[in-house]
Length: 193
Image (cartoon, rainbow, N blue to C red; front, side):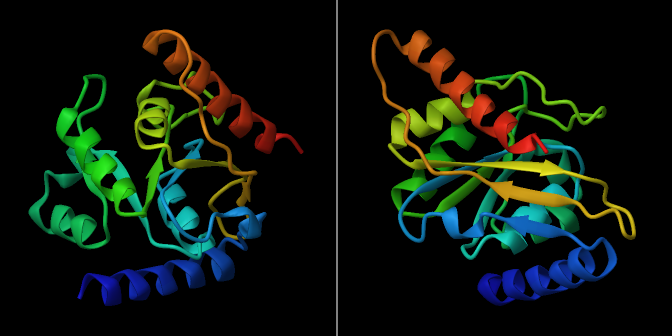
């Protein structure tokens, strides 16, 4: 049921994104075809998860703020689509364990390392969650940069970057700092014209 629903919603979103917004996708061939992947992108609008999902040839399970699951119907739909809740601004062990479980089973987890949408569109400082998951799982990190406007004819664009892995060296806190910085630098590079 959830596989069918995911395909249906993905198809509807693709029609809207391509037909109404005229969305563009670059570098989709860089997505790792199998095995665990942590897909990390900047976050400018609530349309970002659908754009990433339709641009990817693999199902993406998104970490989403807990408040979105407050409404029973919306929460159930999000879960059927593979999303799972995370409490923001606090260490959420349940969300981390869920994400690690998905990665352990060779799936794709979508994250916005900034932790929230950027109202200005400017890239914000990355939090350590993405680096923590990448280091603990050994998953490929695939960066993605999203630019443009989600309005008729606005031409939002997603550009995927080359996959990479983070290496744990030195103290854990230093590895997290370096990993977070690398992820955000890769995303920033994809936002340039």
